Image 1 (cartoon, rainbow, N blue to C red):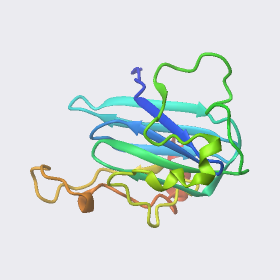
Image 2: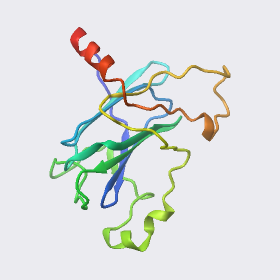
Image 3: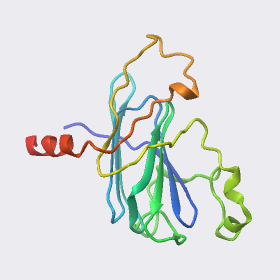
Amino acid sequence: MSCSRHPTVKWAQRSDWVYITVELPDAEDVKLKLEPEGKFFFSATSGASKTLYEVDLDLLDSVDVNESKASVSSRSVFYLVKKAESKWWNRLTKQEGKHPLYLKVDWDKWVDEDDEDKGGEGDMDFGDFDFNGLNMGDTDEIGEEVAEEDGDGEGETAAETKEKKIDGEKDEEAVNAKKD
């Protein structure tokens, strides 16, 4: 039985969205499960030894799985999670009191509730992330290993950022569940 580690997870919000960034360079075998009641599960391997990293959170409230999106880059995995109800959350998870040490506020993306209407989100920097057509749907796999096309993996540009649409793989998940 192998132990998993927790990557650093940063979060910020708007009244209708939650931004979750999992900082994990060179993530492989990325799996995500997001459920309508707010269950958020992430796992991936990283490093030469293929160390397993996992995050299992009960988000504060319900989310819209079909409107939520994900993007994988060489340094992190970013989730744009649509809240089911447009309202500000006083914390990310249902857990009250002290939050896990790996969970941090993403001050680069944070806008106070009072400032949201002032257009504060126009300054949002998503780096190389491209969310066109990336729907989290109802599956948990988003970043199967990407074949190295140039062989050296150096000089990755925004256009080469690893991305994968993550809907339509429910059948594979069901098959894998039956094997277990």
